Length: 98
Image (cartoon, rainbow, N blue to C red; front, side):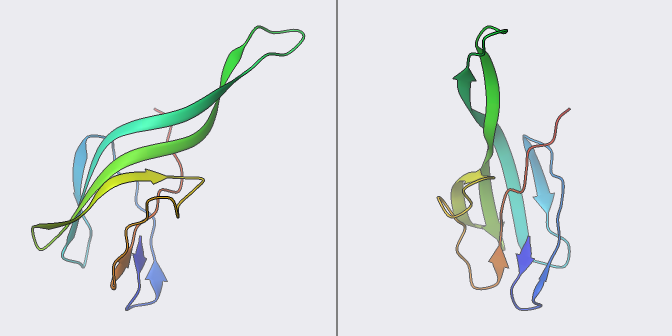
């Protein structure tokens, strides 16, 4: 989370399918489903296996109760579907294993 006016950043861990009120702001984030883009790799000694490449999460952002963003955030490609806002920046840093 970037607070552009304060020129500061803070990381939060937000569970899937939950709502999070960002402290000291009028911003609320709703985190929905997750998606892990994958690819298959076969090696000589092992059968094909899935390699996790790019965690993603579906996000809704509300400012003062009004939706300002609805889309997917990708950890490795934060500029693909960015939340653009004058006061805030939101990025997915990584997926957290259970």
